[in-house]
Length: 108
Length: 137
Image (tube, rainbow over all chains, first blue to last red; front, side, top):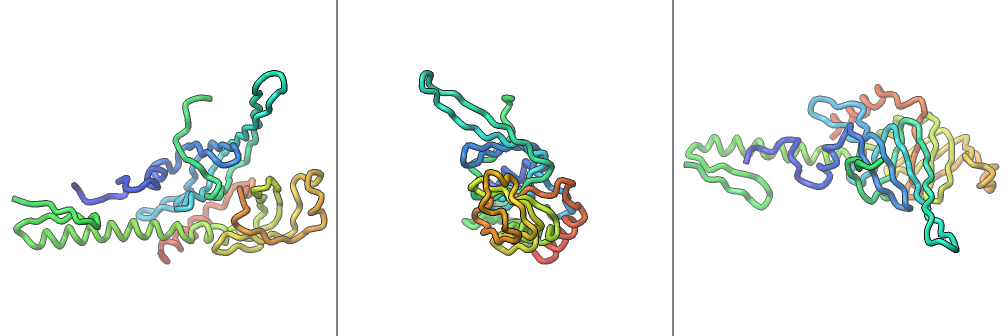
């Protein structure tokens, strides 16, 4: 094995670090989903200003938030209502609401 | 003929006839670990420093109970508790009970989002914060 470099994935947080400056999909509590760019305004030579920390607090740019609410009609079974909320530029997300982080799903 | 020994700590030692090689590998392993340690440690105060640089800017804090408060960031602490000045509730008709509140202290754990200044973040401030982290870390 070669000497460990920065790009070596050793722990789950490294997987997220691979997505820095990429668009990601974040699933939050309360049926919320975010799609945005994991933002890192600068990266000095040996130091990464991390757009997230070990609590999964993170800063996203160009974020689109989708809140999914399910309304149940009395006659039919389910109606799924989607509300879109668009946030401007930068959003700080507190980590305790984050469920999962992933590259964006190839759906919509 | 060389042997590789992987210790529980994750260090990899190469047993080679030359002792110098052994020490070089260990040194590199240690510095790589220190680098990772430093990166992990930076995360501990990272957003705290970031918000400290944001003091004075207008932000909108959205709480976990869906209340959104717009105000000027007055101060922040290590738990990311936030003090806002000159506050106005975003949807005043929905939340009339805070009409007269102009300054508030928000416990960090109830924050869901902090919407940062719409005109974007001053990249230079972040550069400085990053540099300070690098020096202090």
